[in-house]
Amino acid sequence: MKFKFLIAALIAASATSAMADTFNIDPNHTYPSFEADHMGLSVWRGKFGKTTGTVQLDRAAKKGSLDIVIDAKSIDFGLEAMNTHARKPEMFNVEQFPQVTYKSSSLKFDGDKLVAVEGNLTLLGVTKPVTLNVSKFKCIMHPRLKREVCGADATAEFKRSDFGLNYGLPNFSPEVKLAIQVEAIKAE
Image (cartoon, rainbow, N blue to C red; front, side, top):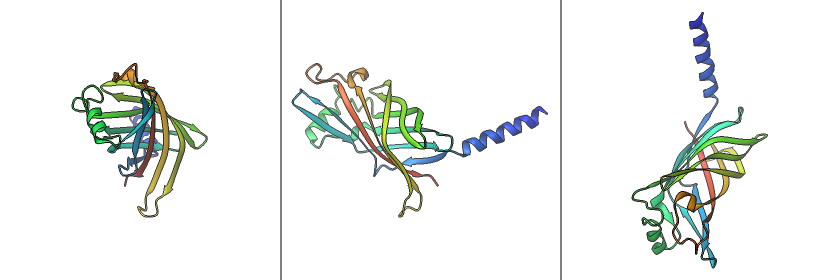
């Protein structure tokens, strides 16, 4: 009897996990960008050019996960001198910390619409909770790829000093605004 119960539980568990779809981050359509104060004079904006990761999405259960890996060396301010400086130990220290990661702990829905992702950002080896607020989320059958593609725009704010990125403080504000445009292609 216990064996039948165990088999039934395993079948139910595998059926539940089979409901989640896997999507691979499209590195050609995903660009985390950020903006930060420059001595109160202007706002510097930059982005990361190389991002990978996966999304697990079970829309019926309103559950899933997000796992993003950003290549810290791909930082781009549009000015090579600034890019070179940002990669140095006093800022992003890309030799010691080549990746910035984000791993979700939960997805929040309002009806069928994804509105937020709660998770942990790891930057410079420090992990802190950061919530991504999702302003746009949509999935379509991509006309060229003939596969489902989901896209979103998400934003967050955090203090870079919480992660040990203290360069220029107090002359530069520690607040950072993060924006992520992301598209992910359903795995075959």
